[in-house]
Image (cartoon, rainbow over all chains, first blue to last red; front, side, top):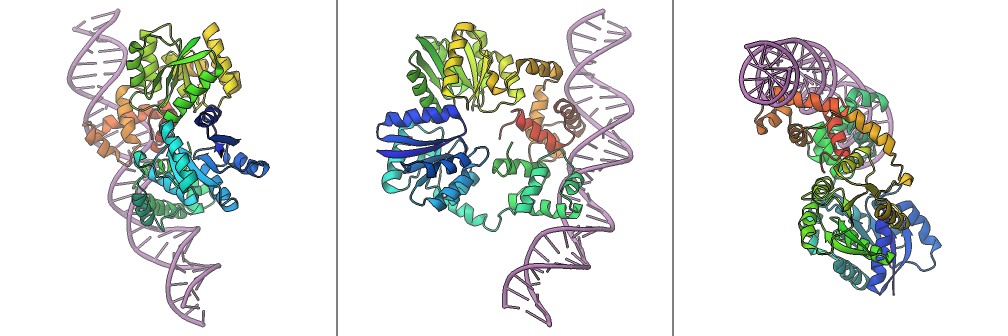
Length: 212
Length: 212
DNA sequence: TTCGCTACCGGGAATTTTCCCGTTGGAAAT
DNA sequence: ATTTCCAACGGGAAAATTCCCGGTAGCGAA
C-alpha cells in the first residue's frame, strides 16, 4: 500500500482525485491540503507519512514551488511530484529546481497517472515523454537563463509594472527615483527578452512571476 | 437516475469527477468531452441524452461560453451548468448570459456539488450563496456594462495590444491606419475603464477576453 | 433626399516610455 | 588601500503612447 499526499486549492479536484487514487487499488490518500501552507503544517501531524505527495503549482497563500522547497528540505525521502495544468518551460524548471522528481499535467490520462506513480515509487522518477517535457532541452534552457535570475527589488517593481500606473507613480510609491525605476526596467527587459512594458507584463504573467 | 454530461480539458479532472458523480449513487455520466467542440459533436450521437451538462469555462478549441450558447439553442431542455475556477464577475455574467442556469466553482465541496445538482434537477436552478455570487449585484453590473460590449474588430486589435508590438506594427499587420488603431484603443480604454495599454492588457486577461 | 450612425482616416501636441550619456557612495574583493 | 562592482541617481533626446481636433464614405431609416 502506497501512501499519497495531495495539495490542490480546488476542493472538487482534490476530493475526486482522492477517489480516483483509491480506485487504483494500491494507493491510500493519507493527507489532503488546500494550499502549500496547510500541507506543510499537516505533514508533522500525520502518523502515516506519505511516500509521494502530488502538489499543484498554482495555489493561494503558499504556492507549489515554495511548499516543495520547504518539504524537500525537511523530508528528503518523500517523493514530490508537481501537478499542474500549464506546461511552459519556466514553471517546470522552477518546480524541478525546487525539488520535484516529476512533472505531471492535469490533462494526462488516469492510466498514465497510475503508471507514473508506480514508476516514481519504484524507480524514484518519471519522465512523461508524451507530455513533450524534454529534460535535456530544459536543462539547456536553465543554463541559458543562468545569471538571469530576477532580484527581489525587480520583482517588487514588476508588480507595479503590471498596472495602470505610470513609471512616475511607481517611483513615488516605491520611494525611489524615476531613474532607478528606469534601471529596473532595462534590466528586466534584458532578462525576459522583451522590448516594451506590455511585453514585460505579458512575459511576467507567462512565467508566473506575477499572478492575475 | 439522472444523466450527466461533462466537458473539461483536463483529463484527470474529467475522469475523477466522473468517479465522484457515480459515487453519489443517483447520477450517471453519459457524455465526456475535452473541449466545447467535442461536446457539441457528441450530443447528437448519444442515445441517453444528458439532463444536466457541467461545462468548464476555459477550454481550448471552443470555450465554455460558445459551447453553452450553441447547446442552449439546440437543446433547450438540457440544463447547463458552468464549472470554473475563476469567480470574477465578467466570466460569470458571460456564462449566465450564454444560457447557464448555475455557476459552480471548482473549489466547492463535493457535498455542495451533490446538493447543487439535486436542486438544479428538481427546481431548475441553483444559487451558491456560499460562493459570494450575488445575482442582484451581477445584474446591476450587467446594466452598467450594457452598451459596453466589445466588437469583433476591437477584439482582433486586443490580441495584438497584448504583445510586444508597437501600434504602428499592429496597424500594419491589421492593414489599417494608425488612426483607426487609435480609435479602437480609445474605445477599449473607455469600455474596460483603464488609461494605459498595460492596464488594457491586464484587464483583458482578467476578463478572459485574451488567453495566456 | 436628408439625417444619423458607424467605420475609417488624418494633423498636431502633450505625456509617457525607451534608451542613450553620465556620477556617486558603499560593499566586497584583491 | 586600492580596485571592482553594483545599486541608486540624474540630463537629455528619440520614439511611442495618449488624447485632442477634425474629415470622408457607406448605409439604413425617416
